[in-house]
Length: 335
Ligand code: NAD
Image (cartoon, rainbow, N blue to C red; front, side, top):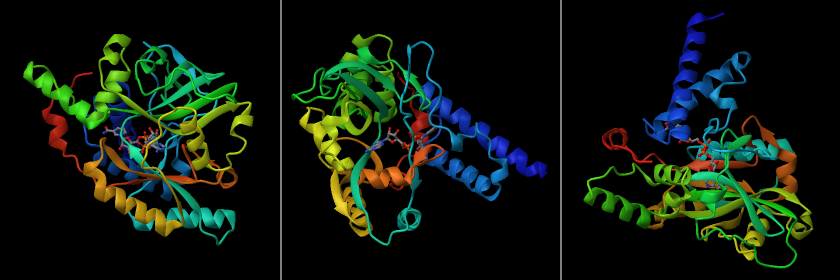
């Protein structure tokens, strides 16, 4: 056994675990995402060369980090996974080819293209149209109970609209802090000589994971739904045979869905969407770190399935990194 390689793997895993803990559990990242992504890639490539050395607790096999014990815990009946990344056109094209090969199909896909909102993933459970529980993603299997905090976000309906509502509906989406609210909050903190938030993602995570919902209520948080988790009595969703249609159904029930979401035909059109959003990135009211491109057809999604920690039918197509290490190191964080 190559001792040097083993040591290198161990070091990378430990480093990534430490960064994840600071990012997900403490809401205090110490390095920019691009640096985390670089090390993650390095580990992924080493593991691809030596698959026999992949351990089940490697960061490449896991989602997020364990939930904080100070919150009640919620287990997700359907795991909340992560997404694989593409960093350029070639990687995106390779993603499309892998899917076509797997389905043994020469046809192009219908893609649901969505901005990749930079916040944190939550699951909100409605029973007969009434909001009964909300949880963070946590490690994908167990999250934190943040029901009281979610209820303070005005965009989140406490009751869904319509008649034929499912008995149980889990809505998944992103809680984030729009830039206007983030800037106003930091200006106020600066004027009062208080600590500022490092970035909107950090501010959203710190605001949502407060033990006192009164603090969360004062923070300008927003929510966009982007997926459906568990549905009991799916009759209400029966007409939706595509991811895009499901999102439109969520919208009809009164859930906020990002207005930039588009259904496009084929890989070229999806690349066009990426370019268009990248161009307009600085004009959007919220921070995004890329776009998410999902095969929309639910039968194809099912046939493609999942691998380790992510679906095979979706990819996070990331934008080139913007942030600098100094922005993280210079600011004192508030949570
Ligand atoms: P990810 O952020 O790459 O992708 C999955 C997440 O995307 C989902 O959980 C969801 O929250 C979000 N998302 C936003 N819009 C979405 C949409 N329209 N549809 C579906 N999902 C959407 O993966 P991750 O596992 O959350 O985190 C990994 C990333 O976190 C890394 O790539 C890195 O950038 C960052 N990270 C940074 C540090 C650090 O120390 N700086 C540490 C750990 C992780």
